[in-house]
Image (cartoon, rainbow, N blue to C red; front, top):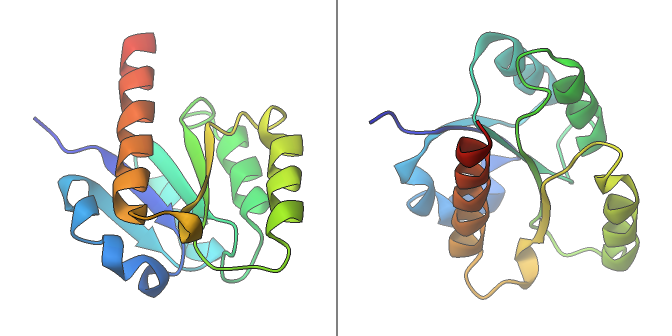
Amino acid sequence: MNRSKILLAQEFSVIADSAEALSCYDVIAMSTLAQAQRAILDDDIDVFVIGIHFDDSNALDLVRQIRSCQKHYCKPVILIRVLPSQFAKTLKHSVMAVQKLYDIADYLELEQSDDPALELCEAIDYQLEKSQTAA
């Protein structure tokens, strides 16, 4: 059985502790918008995981591109926050406001989690299962 392909658009060093847990997936880790944009065009991604503290852009730039891409427009997108922020409440409200507009499957505040790797893997598995039953 093929491993599910996950595009992780987040500075990988920030979530390096999750690397072992993510090893059950084929993870394509991108730390810049340009890299992620190329991956969207070149690869068949099953789930997109995008950090809201994305290096050279904001996460919604990438979400808009995914939603405008014919082969990925219906694929699950999970937004994650892994770094503490004094604007955490505002960020959460902002994501909730655009969640329906861009069909964002989930938003995880992993910096608050006791086990961020487990929480992320559970969210990915849930979205994979959901997309397989919908197909």
